[in-house]
Length: 512
Image (cartoon, rainbow, N blue to C red):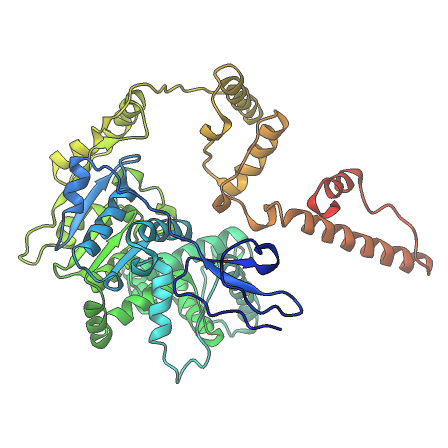
């Protein structure tokens, strides 16, 4: 087989087959029995700098020290962050010494792509999630004497299984008199239930996010007279031992260990010298452990630029603490000890005036006393770039009636008012439980639906669901055949595929 020519430097390349490019002017290459290929550089698309308003420009011009940026929805937060990083690099900053942290892989990819377009792919700084950064830090400083293999990160479902298995094992250990965890009598009947396992898992996560260990939790339980928390402390110690034996980490333990590493003198010195500036997106979603990590990364008056909106702090159930953003000016003071400055993005490009007025009626009931009053007022009195918008509230007697009317509103907007489907959205509170029902109702009413990928469980993915249905059908056929053979001594032809399953498979990609 012919050897292809050398790869040109740079990541922006695509592959073309020589058998279909005979008319092009590129150099000829030797042909092998299977054809030959060459890599052709795709010129990067030129992206003109965006027009920034005065409030955005004041953030971009920030050079040194901590800064909190209050950025409401539609105020150009991501654009301002990208332009701040671009401007720092344009002033001579080293992109390898700039770190951008966010909370989801999708957001990290978007930030990387947009920064690469503005700075060039070779000069784009690192944009990653908190957990990815912590995992890299833990792996880099992993004790090779204790762990031969790299520590593996547990997924959420894997952690659920681990906690439930440990709790279920407590019943047998108590029966044998070998249990180290003494759950109160009123809780023992709950040990094998999923709801109790979810509660225990939440306690474990919050404990590590607060930087507490089993001993600290036990001391607190003794002082407050909570035998259930004492049992949780003993269970936490056992759970951590199991994680170490298996060489795995859950998400809360990952950040906790990264914070402990960052506080070691040698690691702290390395981190302090590693980054000149740290940017954080969606700062209102940080938990106490992540705030401690940021202190190690960019405390002491170093450059830390945090973008967030305290009115959008909605992930308390995941451990997010709005106090992180409220306390930022005093938690991250300037080098001379003064509180960190606070800037506000003041222009809303997404919502019309009527929508902003409606949200203002709600946010004015939520006091933000620890931030400067004039900054809070400016943050909540955004200037719209356009008028319009309408807010209406409806109540319905049943969930089915509600879905029927939502479908009707969407269809009327599309057919009578000409609103494109792509400009409509339906938001729900509980994605995994609600989205499948909403999707079926809207699809049945003729409304095309595209569900955000982050809100679709793997088993409901269009590429996965038909395969699982087929596997369940095959398993049912085998079980039916085995049952018939056991009863009569020979295989029996039974109807194991119902009409609905057959139609689902015939209309799926598996049917071709």
